[in-house]
Image 1 (tube, rainbow, N blue to C red):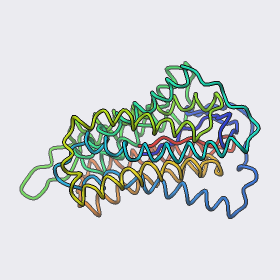
Image 2 (cartoon, helix red, strand yellow; image 1 turned 180 degrees about the horizontal axis):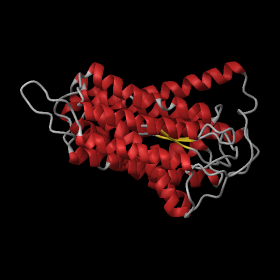
Image 3 (cartoon, rainbow, N blue to C red; image 1 turned 45 degrees about the horizontal axis):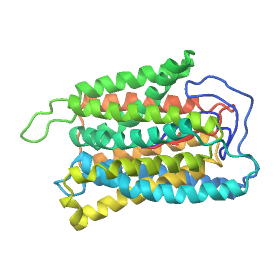
Length: 353
């Protein structure tokens, strides 16, 4: 999952003043990034959109994989492969970027190292929670709840930390998203042939919201690192590296027999390289040439992709109440994206999900 958290980076590819994740104004006007031709802008749009679509395949990929997988084992393998690849690519790009910028690198110490490791720990925790949510309630419901709760919880966390009131748009979006999640909780899948549709599984629902909560922490932590002048690729690469290390310690304690099958290996490589390594790099690069208005809209392609794949490819059937909940939750996300389209917004930094 990749969610957009608007903030004000000071040392990354884009350092425009604007609004924070609660919708508060934090600076002056910002136009589209300077130095980008129309062709370059198109490439940035395609990069962000492609990344969002890749992230949207995550839940369906696991559902189409071997039957004997577990959320913990899939998540651990995904990050060992994808986190390592992401770290290698991102650190190379960060080094190239450092050679072409005159801004001095921020000092490395215990605090920034701790924050970077924290993002990796949260990303590692996100994996089993996300996959448990999609396993219990289906890809469409599990993914949309996780993606819908992430920016809302990120805003709530920032509200608690800063004690500043959020914007009216953010509060309206939060209210809509909350109503949508509640309706999903009472709705769930439609009755299957020979069985009853007993509503959304509460454990799965909590897991999806928990996955969103881990990225609330990531969003706020990464924002602070970027505000201190850290390069976006350094930030995202450190998250990949630390998450891979954490996940490697999990591997001896999970059943990896499924990895010996062709379908299991293909699933692991896709989830790791495509939906982590490649998607993160494409998204981080793409954000450097886009305004928050464009990026916030493009990221809606992720929940849309997940929902379409869940219903069309996996044949998931939702109850009428759950469909209403999804629509209301989607409206909340759309309102949140629209609220970040003010011309004073900075380019956002994204968080995977």
